[in-house]
Image (cartoon, rainbow, N blue to C red; front, side, top):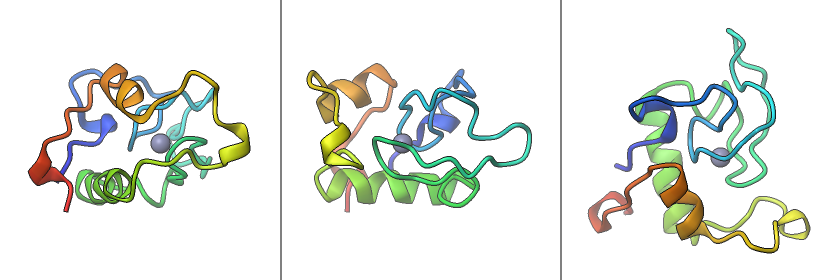
Length: 97
Ligand SMILES: [Zn+2]
């Protein structure tokens, strides 16, 4: 199972707890805001309730190709590998299945 962003060493509260994308506001404040991540489509308070659920969501997103949530809104220079590397998420082969 992949280590979701919210459980890395020093997570930023304004970033998606699953993939680390900048949400522009906290996903939890301190209760969940139910904001949907533009990148991985995870919903704060639903898909990131705990480390296990967030890790499973992350692994499934990556396993299905890590497509941007709303394709028409995908930043021009965005790439899944660059995104995950910038978030400090290490993807190992065994994590994605
Ligand atoms: Zn996300």
